[in-house]
Each structure stands twice: as C-alpha cells, then as structure tokens.
Image (cartoon, rainbow, N blue to C red; front, top):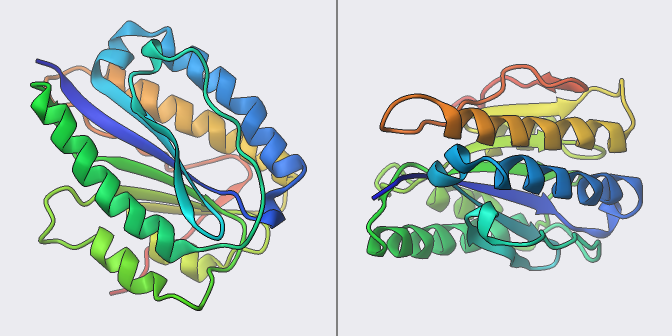
Length: 220
C-alpha cells in the first residue's frame, strides 16, 4: 500500500493562449515528465493529471503514475474561457480518481491543483458557485489550489481561485518565459512533495515564483 498525493495541472486552452504561451507549456511538459517519471521515490507517492478548459473542460491526461506512460499529450488552443465547466469537472474527477486509488489499496491525501489562466471567465455560467462546490468544507476531498494568472487574467479572480497560493505575472518576463517558470515550479513542487520524508506526503507549495507577484489571499 502506498501513500498517494494527486496533482492536477489545470490549464486554460482558450484562443488567447495560442502562440508562444502554449508553445512554452508544450515545450516544458516533456521535461516535467522526464524529471518525475524517472524518479521512483516520487512516482511511488504521487500521481499526475492534466485537465484543460476552453468552451468546455476535458481530461487531457487521466491521473497516472508518470513512470507508467510514455509521453504527455500536447495542449491546443481554441474557444473561450469556461471556468464553471472545469471546476465542475474537477469535482467529479477527483471523486472518481480517489475512489479508484483507494480501491487499489492506496492511502490518498488531499489533491493539489496548479491552475493557470490568461483570461476572464465566461459570465454565462456561475463559475463562483462551481468553485464553491469544489472547495466545499463539507467535502473531504476538497483540493489545495495554487492559481497563476498571466496576460489579461484578473488578479482579483486569480486570488479567489488560488485559495492556497495565488500569483500574477508581473511583466518582467514574456508570457512564454513566465510559463516556463510556472512549469519549473510545478515540477519542483511535485518532486519535493514526493521526496519529503515521512509516511504522509504533503504538498510543498511555492512562496516565490520568478516572473510572478504573490497575490493576497481572497478575503472571506
């Protein structure tokens, strides 16, 4: 029986991410796969998934042991920025993922989400209710969320999403450079969390990210 800490990369695939930003993420994912997938200690304690959203949300990479897959899929930009759809999908996907891990005999710890967006959420659906459902204190599986905003993302909204940590690109780097740093922080966080001593793995969250400014926690 292993102690498992699930990580979800939740990435905006809307049209505004097309070009250098999405290319930077696609260039960084093979390195993330190599760094984590070749580390047996980290693979024993962590699982990784990619969830994307534009007009709708989708599971691009189901939760997996990165040593057991040959490559990660590429991100592709299109459509708009539907926050509600991705928060609803995450709620159901975390439920099913944790149930599957427990059925395999694992102990599962609170999931961590690294959320990335460069735009303002669609207003035709209530994304704040969907986020509240995902973070419902009565739901034992509610995730830690570390949110990153670039481009035209609203810092106030990124702060609402990033209940654990929130960061906004500070303009000192190009969007592509900032996303390279984002991917490096995600990789280090998974490796450090999976490598930490002790029986109960815990997420080691960044406090400083080059090219980003830490945002204040959203007031409740």
